Amino acid sequence: MNRKFYQKWNAFYSKVSLRYVIWGAFTLTALLGAVLMGTSFYNRFSLQLQGIVEKQNRALIEQVNNTLTSELRNIMRISDSLYFSVLKSEENVPVEEGFALLYDTNKSSIQNIALFSKEGDLLVSAPAAKLKPGVDVTKEAWFQNAVTQTENQHFSRPHVQNLFVNSKGNYAHVLTLSRMVQVPDAYEVQDGVLLIDLKYEQLESIFKNISLGEEGYIYLVDGAGNLIYHPQQQLILDGIEQENHEKASAYKDGVHDEVFEGQHRKVTIKSVGYTGWKIVGVVSDKAAQLSTVKNIIFLIALVMSFMLILSIINSYISKKVTIPIEHLEGAVKRIAEGDLETTIEERGAYEISHLGRSIRKMKVRIKKLMEDIVREQEIQRKNELDTLQSQINPHFLYNTLDIVVWMVENEKPQDAVRALTALARFFRIGLSKGKTIITVRDEIEHVKNYLTIQKMRYKNKFEYYFEVEEEVLELSTLKLILQPIVENAVAYGMEFQDGDGEVFIKAYLKEEKLIFQVVDNGPGIMPERLEEIRAGKVVSSKKGSGIGMRNVGERIQLAYGKEYGIQIESEPDEGTCITLTQPKIAYGQEGELL
Image (cartoon, rainbow, N blue to C red):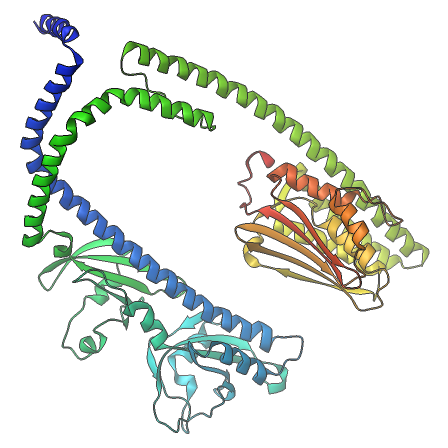
């Protein structure tokens, strides 16, 4: 029976003009819309509104977390600067001047900077101050945390810092960062405690202007549930208001439903790095629901929208008829732009469906042809990389053996042994089990072995320094791209130096790119020769064939693309800076380059 009905319906439908089809669809849509829209749209809108509110709250809390984390990182960077650039500086910078300079630079956010001995004696402070009589800093929580956990930097709870003599008597409300440090020998002690007081108002300003709707708010707790900031903090401490902060400190990151003092509310948690603190956003469930006034506005808007829909639905249905064609047009456009994974839909009338099927088959054939081309180009690229690599290794081996011969001839067998040992380590990393990609850590070690050899040859002519960011050590890099550049810096830049030569090797991240820099204070490169090098010409000299730098640039561009490679900056009698740029790629994620 169903089959007969279906056949009769198809016979009838095939005789009805498109005009009546659209009219019938319009009428049916209007009737169904009148019945269904009123019952379903309200619930859908409420769910969407709730989702929007939660998403906005998470975004605001994430914004606060980013700002707070940035502020804490800044304080930690100041702490590191005080420790490594002032206390452990090899340039004999007076500690008092270093403290004063960093304080003056950051005094808008920092209240005090002080250095104490392990026995609690004040060694340096900025601004200059004296301890209050009878104060024993060794009993302070921040001091004890630094002494008992020497490897970490510690943030205290908010407190009034009244350690120092203050003629005005208005002691500041602060957060204290403390850490164990090594104090310079001039103070005749080995260990000490560094204190940096962050102004509490700096922390308060991060939260002060953040609002989670009409009834929402945001506060900060530590891992033990103690309040660090709350918009009604004083009222809570006085017992006038209540907050569920101790329970909130145990929540994991995310959104939680809770009932507090009979009120249903949503609590959003975000942990703050380095501290164990948690940002807590609280919003009442009512904030995500429509009020009575909003219900009326919604119903009015619903009626108006329904009337508007009735007026445009005819054109909408006409458009629906053309949707299969629009989908095919969009798919063809995406294929033309290179997206061969796009889906080709086979629907609509016979002609449209057949066209879609033909385009899909064409897409499969194009994809296969492109994969074959890419595979061939990849094989060719690897062969070119291997060829360039094989040019560089003999080049360095020749120069190193020349150094060993020179040491033996000058009756320096111990130096020759050290040079050969460094050479063995150099080639151990250079071989790298046949890989063309190694970690930055290995590449830096590779260059250190090379410089060990060169330092022995150019004794007392130059010094070398490494400035390598910790976060780049486990990134991947092409093997043997740094050593040829350093070789040029030593061979051409240090020849006429007499104990004052310097070579700096730097590695850092900039705009999601891995940057290597080799800087020397040699005689520089004459403009004419510099232009030849930049143009990719092999510039031979008595020092070598000149292929090293060109090969490094070609290897980088073959591996990663033309936007990466080498930049050379040089001024006669000033020195030379060579910059190598590669993409930031974690080691082990290089794909076909491994």
